[in-house]
Every structure is written in structure tokens, then in C-alpha cells.
Image (cartoon, rainbow, N blue to C red):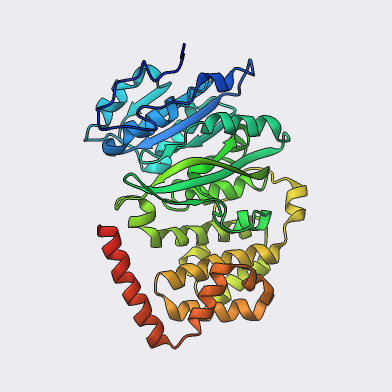
Length: 378
């Protein structure tokens, strides 16, 4: 007999098939342990009723035996509240009220959460089938200083899988400090470390996840695993599509703040000389926690600033700010090892293209932009 939730949850309409509509994770995958660590999932939502039910089902139909699902709705005017009410019996806590944005909503959930392991899943994304069982197993098998694990994420549009992404750069302390090299929905972390370093910074609307993960990496160890944990929905209103150029500005602020808190004067001077850091250089908030000395002493500062500047350079190129990108490229080539650029396939490609005559490069980028827009519209 199947003791899963599928038979108890609201029955979906006939056209909704597959995961997480007609399928569930078997409860039998949990039978070999008598106790499982509590996992808290926070789902912030605002007027995402078109996607919300699928997200909730992808969490509930994990059939995880020690689950805490917290839904924080920002006072939606669409069908979101009725959907939440339909699943209220299986939700640990929910509220619908006006908030100050996504970070505020997630922080409300963090404050309520009691799990040992935690993450947030936005209301347009999904967990993969069996994800929570794998997450729990990894944390149970890893050393006690494991603060975060990150796996893979499948990008999908409507019902079509586009690609699977794992880490971009080779996982290292320096790459974790430089920007996000893994996908947020595919990351799970220990609540005790979250409580130690503090919650999301609400003034960072686009890079709040990077800022948090950067702080977590100063007090715990991260582990990359080979399982795919999440499905990321690509649609016109998602932040990474509609407002992609805003992310790097927040990343710059967070990295400047890191350098100020760790008293990295040489790195701050290099960013100042780069000419691409402006208002970001004024950003500061104090770290109200103690970093792990062993971790701090292990950081190769030169690589950390190199990785971060490389992220900025790629963004400048991708957003068409070619003059600034060329200037930053020259600074990288004159201050860092050539082999570092060659080891980063994307950065090496950008640097090679920046050496193409400018009028040719702008024409190429213009054509690509037109085709990209047509693809998004379709």
C-alpha cells in the first residue's frame, strides 16, 4: 500500500501530468532510517498563482518524513491565496500580507523555520523528484562542518528542458567568495550557520543570495554534489530574465563589503583603479559574526579578487558596455596570471572577442540581441 501524499492532495486537472502532478517520491526510500533531520523549505510568493501550486506539490510530494513548509505571500491579488488555502493542511505555516520585497518575505520564513537544514524555493521553481531524500543523505554522510551543499539545476521553459547546470567555476573558497557559481534553488544549508551569519540583506534586491552564501562560506565548508535538486523556470517575468543587468551591481557591493570587513586594502585599491566600481565602493555593513580563522587564513586573496573582476568583466561584455570591458580586460591581463584567464573558458572567449575591431563586434552583438529577443518572445 502506498502511504504517500499523492492520493490525499487535491486532484489536478486532466491535462496536468508527470511530476509533480501525477507522480510522487515513494515513502519507501525513507524506510532504512528511523529518524531524518528536519528540512525547512521557505517559499516566498507574490502574484505567482499561475506557478505556485506546482511548486507546492514539488515540495510536498517529496513525502519527506520531517518536512516544514513555510509559505510567505506578499498580499497577492491573484489566485495565490486560494491555492495556499487549498493546501493549508499540509503547510506548516503561511501568511499573506504586504511585505518589503522578496528578501523580507524569505527572512520572515527564516525566522519561523525550525529545521536543521533549510533553503528557499521561489514560487515559480520546483524541486526534482526525490531531491530532499538525497539532500538529507548527503548532510548525514558529510562532516559536521558542512554548511552548504549544492547540486545541479535543470532550466526549463513551459514543458521543455533547456539545459542542466552544475557549478560554473571549479568549486573553491575563492570562487564562492567572488560570486554565485552554483544555482540558488539547488543549494541547501544548515540553519545553525544561517543564524550565526545573519539573514538576507534586504537592501540587496538582486544579489542577496550571493551575499548570504559568501558569508556562509566564511564560517563553514561547502560541498558540490552530483545530484540534480531543482528545476528553474525560464519566463519573461523571472528576475534573471527581466532584470539581469541588476545582479552584477549587487555582487559588486557585496564583494566591496567583504573586502572592507576583512580589511583587504589592496583589493579595494584595485577595484578603485578599475574604473568600473562607482557607488558600489561606498557600500558597507558590518559583519556581526566571527569568521573561522582557519578559513580566513586559507583564502588566496589574489584569486578571490581575480574571480570577482572576471565576473564583472563578463557582465560588462554581455550587457554591451564594451569600452569598460576592454579597460577591465587590460587590468586583468596586467595584474594576474595569463593561465587563470585561459582556464576560464567563458572569460577567455570574452577577452578574445574584445580584441575584435569594435565596429565588427557591435554588429555581431546587435544581431545576437535581435535573435535572442525573438527567441524570448516565442
